[in-house]
Image 1: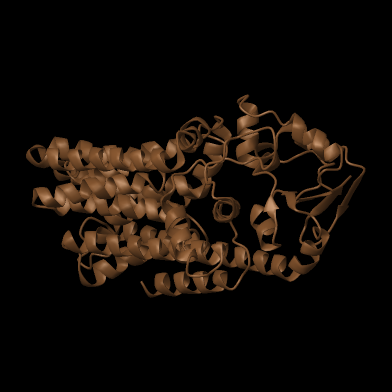
Image 2: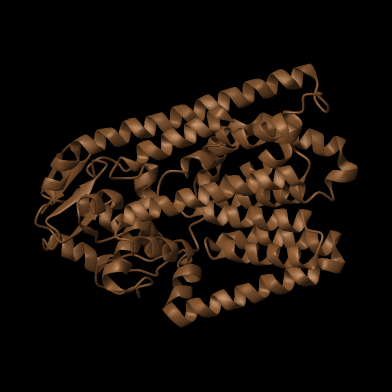
Length: 456
């Protein structure tokens, strides 16, 4: 628990001192927020003219961040502080749910502290993210449905599950799992949860349509579907499933031993639903956030058993395996966060020189949207989502390619040499037509922080 608190605090504070976040997506979120603040448009209709971007997330976190921004702080700071608040709500929800299930003392501290072994949990704490609010709403909803003994608690649980979906629409999957459990195990109280979930969903959808029109649903539904990629699922599984393999095995073993009760336990339902939903990471662009619910459900199930001083449910050999698993995962997460901080400090040191290369330009073409915003510019394109739309025939990159070759964007900043064969990440983030345009530019030269300046 002490390690979890210390690591979270150090990570958040050190990120707060930097002008950019480590995550690609946070740069896009910041660009959407800043564009909304200046243009008044959040869900912009996709057109043949720049900027080329779409917002494939619901508006809840953006509304919170913009509200905080009214106090005069920058969009980046507002987004980070809102995210930290979401992290606190999530930790509080895990703590309250565990405590309400009879987990106290060292078992409770160990259960909450086990989150320090999760990269999806810790990595999201410091930057401008939205999945922590989504997960927090889901956990609160599950907890209320699990421990609630009245229809009022069930109704509040349904509302919490719906709110989570307005932070990230994919939370509808664990929400349906929770509601299925209520229908199966607490049928007499199920109508309260179902009614408030449906009612909150209809009300929220109506408000979104009223404020942003049908274009918001085009962004969140039509533009969100990704490109199938089993290779990405394998890569993500090795990154976020394999490091917790022993914890997952221990969970499966204890669930089998306790099978008379586990099949009726909402935490086990949460875990099974999250495990199945994690396979949706078989698409380009999926990353650690797709495994967040799975890690949280594992914490809820494994923590109380792992830190039970009586040793019930585990042999000596299991005990040593779990010790190695937890210690190794904690060290690994700490090392990953430290590596990101070192990389970001290097970019910060080079930032004045990088920004000087873009001086005099309005909108800038770059892969790192957060870097563009740190230099005081707006981004011409959010490359990954537009590449996905191009592959599905929903966006034609030809006008942008012509603009590049006509010198409309004098300089492009890339974290790779476009003259070399593109790697997996670049293939996913840039359409073939744009990669070909970069490769044929008359001037390509390396600059600071492992980046290349492409000029016409």
